Image (cartoon, rainbow over all chains, first blue to last red; front, side):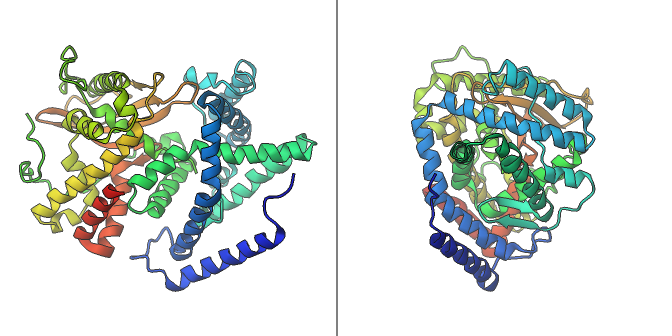
Length: 265
Length: 213
């Protein structure tokens, strides 16, 4: 399969990325410093670079994919990749000592792979056994590694120092581990390509909503990502009962007419 | 990154009640004095049934969407409280006119989210409210109700939590959680960022500007 970019274009892209990151450090003003995000300036720069690449390449391809392939087939393909991902989740749940999760995931993979036609039909979710996503970044967290500062990686997107390391392991397993099972290089590359496109397509609704409703997509994505990783490392029980405690600065009853709300009956 | 943020906007629609047209009076209002999870389930079922029957909403008719938000959603949501908590300590610094404008602008943001979310309802969409995990203290006035939303056939359900407060008029929803992300908490960060850069008026303007796009 011919590569999409020539070596020259790839080199130019790398230079552009480096410049973008450096310029971000020099000129960007980002408001008050966020202790969870000490690298905010360069993170924002990479975030914008990722956005540009996404708008130029990934999103149009994903939209074309969505236009051509009917929804049930797209769901089927998505479920197949997620099912394969469940195997790695099972390994990680075991490494973390979460035996209940590991058992549940194992049952999911078994059911979906056999009765679910190789993962196409997500029968396990319909019987109430939710997917338990897990990856090596969470494993490192459970083993006690601190997350390190928030990072935005080129193309890959949100990460932390710990999660980036975990992602490297995930990728190794996915590309080299599973990849070695497929001998034909063209087939293997086509499957990787399909995986990228279908994962982007699965997120199209989310990203469209974000575009329409977020004031500052960067901080929304960052805060959501960090919260989610914290919850995954902490485990289901740890965060379940921890409700955010909002200070209410307007506890006196509000004048509803002044606020333009229809009076409550 | 796997974010489910669109779902909590999509699922604010479940806070509504009544049918979409005044002719469908056969539907009874959900009872805000019932137990909180029953209330949420009644609301969800009614709204979904009504939405599935209306094709203009699925086509993205904005006027219709705003009408639905006003008729079905806002009556069951303490939206002023949601905005107030999202603004945090800046709420006290705002004049009453600014507060009113902020509530209106924030409501516009969420209305835009709904128009996309409503368009994605299909026959297989369903909401299942889970029973209360611990037997709620009879005097509890602030409670979390969990539900599972199945958006399409053959996809895994998504967890959606509502936070309700017991007011004089019964239960009202004021916060939503999708995949560990509370709506108010998330918008607080964005509001604070915007206010620190451009002030409260700047925030209102930014929210309204999004409405034009």
